[in-house]
Image (cartoon, rainbow, N blue to C red):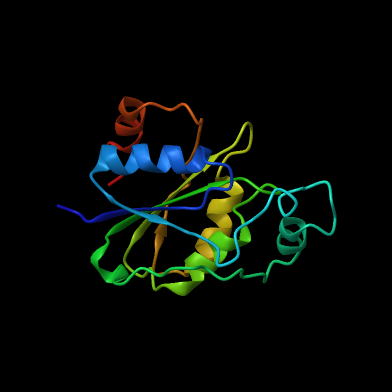
Length: 159
């Protein structure tokens, strides 16, 4: 049996809900990509050019610090990485997670929660961040109301 991890960042709770459902459906470990300094409502105001999220997303090299690390990433074969879509891609905090570990030989499957964006732009960036040793799937956009049965149907054959 393959060892599966569902790692996620959630700003509003929507991605967290989906990640928990996915972890349950796949009998996977769950890990929250949590910033050392939590995001406030003001930080997430995308209309404010000086808000924390806007500043981070404007800098492709931004790597906000993650509060916790996974003790042994080597035990996982497959890593689902979940996030809301910010500025058409994964948030910079997810980039921090992806550049912290060696994903060589692992399958990475992104999933996003968004009203309209998909994961293709993020998948391209994730391939760059994790390097050629990782196999990165194109992933999927999921609604906040996706059912466990739908998650099982989606992941069948992915792992």
